[in-house]
Image (cartoon, rainbow, N blue to C red; front, side, top):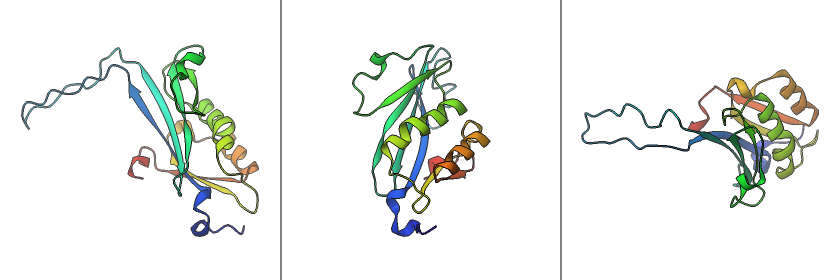
Amino acid sequence: MTTTWKNSPERIYNIDEKGLMENHKPPNVASNKSVPVAVTLLSSNTTTVIGCGNAIGHAIPPYLIFKGMRMRDELLEGCLPGANGTVSDSGWSNSEIFQKYLAEHFVKYSVQSTAEKPVLILYDGHKSHVSIVLSEWARERHIILFVLLAHTSHVL
């Protein structure tokens, strides 16, 4: 492998996701001793956004996961150009959705990976992001998966 990541920052990507609550209710802070009991309503719907960018600042368009049974085009109205998405029962990502994101969305907007010039992806090691099928898929496409400890990618 001839790639040195220091000389190829455009080949280093970081992927993270964030759940957005539809019915977010900010806490009422009256003093430094008050502790809010909840910041979201129990009936909240969650939409997850998968974001990705590389080390030179190129952002891949967002990928959204809506709560629902069927993806509808109007869910993406007003989104950034290139944004795409899907649905899940909960609005959260899962192994199947994460692999679909990589296979259909990430590879469409990232630099091409080859045996001589692989792509490095840094991402959260949540259980929905780690599978043998995903590892084999990435290896076949010369994509190196660098899995961070679960729930620590926010530090990046």
